[in-house]
Length: 525
Ligand code: FAD
Ligand code: DLZ
Ligand code: SF4
Image 1 (cartoon, helix red, strand yellow):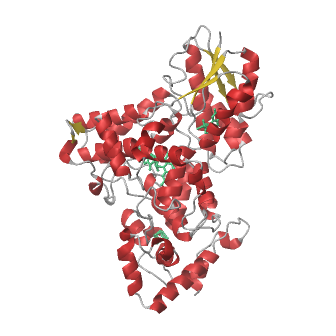
Image 2 (cartoon, helix red, strand yellow):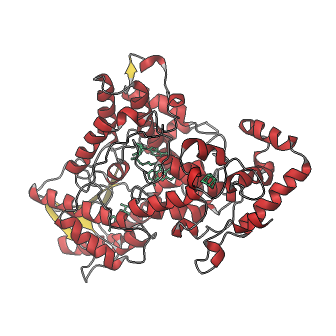
Image 3 (cartoon, helix red, strand yellow):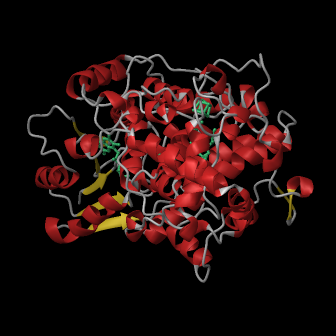
């Protein structure tokens, strides 16, 4: 009576639904490193190293608890390279009566899984992933009959249901949301806490060597690898964040600084997304810090909202709307992704800084992702599928269920406003206010057109011009459209001409010299 329990690389949680009732006397846990997962997108080298190392550590911990683990390594010569192929081989090895799984994070894998019962000839039990606050069914009930899904209302229901930051039936501090207090720019000379990075042990070093050799063509550096790869490291990192960074997380959540991607952010997404931490324990830790008087309410609320609100909400939208969601393109954006998203070679200092952070750490914080590389792609009309592939590839925390709604919906407005009530379009003034990037840039955020004009300024107005049919009646864009309409026609023409010259100079081709200096044309006008 053997049960085969197949655990995927982002399911590294001891009380996972498919592991809770394990019988170590008879059951076998299957874990497989497969080429299909390491290459379905060109993952950053650190992402592959993180998952393979965390999988190997998790398997070792299960084995230490007396559980039989059948672990297939990437370099096993018999490895078929796919989940389906490895599951079939394991069924032949163990002749199980049934296979138990937890539902996967991605639609792509869900489609494979649903076939397995029929194709493998063994009953396959797919269990709900109960590591989230909100099940897929619960979200669907919330979303039923709503024309658009606003995170804020979903979040309030989650607060009520979980009791997090609640006093009886009311939100702590009599407000649900302290976002207005969370938009400060970083004062000059502000000290940011040194961040905990974990020295790779022998298992991680072996994986890093494998990745360096086998995935040398993938984007990203391995040198700065310091992600938690075990639950105990992840818990240590969480405790460090709560003690040293959470007190200022709220205030400076949106700030950006050259060479400092971490600032006061939590760095917990890699651990949450592969299962080393659960969202509940992370939120409870933040709530406790507030109750103990260690942090202000705006910090605890701002942080908990990201996890209890945004993280659950984007997952709900993903599962409710896939697979059609990915195919929408409300603004008809179609330009190819400029090569500088990979090379970082651009005169736009903000973009160059974010790509550099991303390459070095497989990390950039939310506002860097949303308001620099995201806003540029939105304003420049880059094809959503190409932008999404980039975001899925370059971050160590990237899985489609969380990456896609953030990119497609929040950053690119490609879903036409299902997720955000207006596009996150902004000119250079926003980046200038929230960062020190502009001080080191050859463009000037105060110059709107002509020599030295910040490309974000040109593209911002051009974006509104080009998308008037889709956005002109959006009440939240009334003010910028009125400003645009008050401009003399010749000025609007100048903006359109300069913006299009700039856009024509962007190249997706690394061998095209203009790919590294895409802004040249705008200055030549
Ligand atoms: P903090 O800023 O400290 O926030 C704490 C936690 O809140 C995060 O760990 C994360 O779990 C959660 N969170 C915060 N914002 C969001 C959000 N918008 N959606 C979901 N969860 C959120 N996050 C991913 O985990 N994987 C992705 O692939 C991903 N892709 C993104 C793509 C774009 C275009 C944008 C704009 C955002 C994306 N995010 C993604 C959300 C967010 O940027 C990251 O969760 C965050 O930067 C992770 O760093 P942190 O742990 O230091 O987060
Ligand atoms: C991301 C990833 C990578 C790089 N490699 C593996 C792997 O070799 N084996 C595995 O089980 N999982 C891996 N993963 C995580 C999967 O891609 C993830 O489980 C699916 O996308 C489902 O969310
Ligand atoms: Fe970015 Fe414009 Fe500032 Fe340069 S001036 S860093 S391009 S926002």
